[in-house]
Amino acid sequence: MDKKPCGIYVHIPFCKQKCRYCDFLSAPGDSKCIREYVSVLKKEIGSYRKKASEYEVKTLYFGGGTPSVLEPEQISDVVETLKETFDLGGLEEFTIEVNPGTVTREKLLGYRKTGADRLSVGIQSADDDELRLLGRIHSFEEAKECFSMARETGFENISADVISALPKQTIENYSRTLDSIIALKPEHISSYSLIIEPGTPFYKEYGEEGPKKNDLPDEDTDRKMYALTKEKLLKAGYHRYEISNYSLPGRESKHNSSYWTGREYFGLGLGASSFVSGVRYSNVRVLEEYAKDPTKRIIEEETDQKSLMAEFMILGLRMTAGVSKKEFKRRFGVDFEDVYGEITEKLIKEKVITEEGDNLRLTDYGLDVSNAVFAEYI
Image (tube, rainbow, N blue to C red; front, top):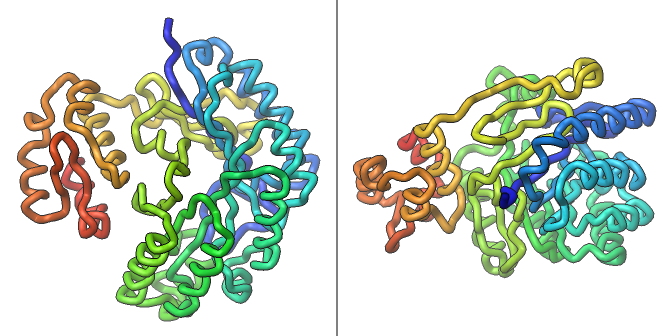
């Protein structure tokens, strides 16, 4: 039996300090807590032994939180357990997220020995005042040092994260951040506009009722930053392959791209989500509960044909390459026009989608108003 390709995401929910804008499932954890978590995580991995035999893992991603709070030996321990359970023989990409404030040369060397070949570095800004405002634990100088050490230890594929529309951020400040990050020559850049999430310290200050809500850039400034990102990165040789992601040729994130193209994936660790055999489920989100039973899972959705077709369109259109009508028929056994022909014709007339032979993709304007386009396919 041919094995099905899949991805694996491993969630490390610990960080040295919670960022003030972050609503991810993460919190500070001491060394004892981290050791115990790794032990429980290995138990969860082992529980997949029977199901794992059906799959071949193509991408592996350690995210968080801050995976770089783990020692290389702990990462290695988890990877060895994965190898005992899953088929990692055809692994094409192995990414670890790192925070410059937690990285050492020894850690990076250790991560390389585990097989990691890609880093995702959470820089966010090149302005130290903005970094302090965000609650980041690193300076931009430390971010530059992280890049230098990563290159010296053999990492040839590095991604950098940057956030725009920060409180009191000007277009000039953001432009300097882009220039500074481009100067580091990462192979990949993820650019996001700040979202003020409920339950975060930022929400209390900058939310709808927050006393500093007027410190946020207005919509016009936000859009100018968005346009500046496209302009500067294109000029520097980065192509936009997804709404928020840019890369040098051939350096697209294989792991994230697999999500957008509908590949199955196993989410391991506290609160991690999975999509396996047409079912979406997640692990429990309370650490004590996860530690007690790491195999306890919450079914989120048993996907039907209609929802899978809508997801195919929404995730596929996030990619600038768009979607294939032939692939739609191959996957679902029905003609694209019979399902979405009328909707798509309308969107083409509105100039948010363009059709080139078999392919449909968002126009530049369509990318700007993508959420409204996606709503049409739900």
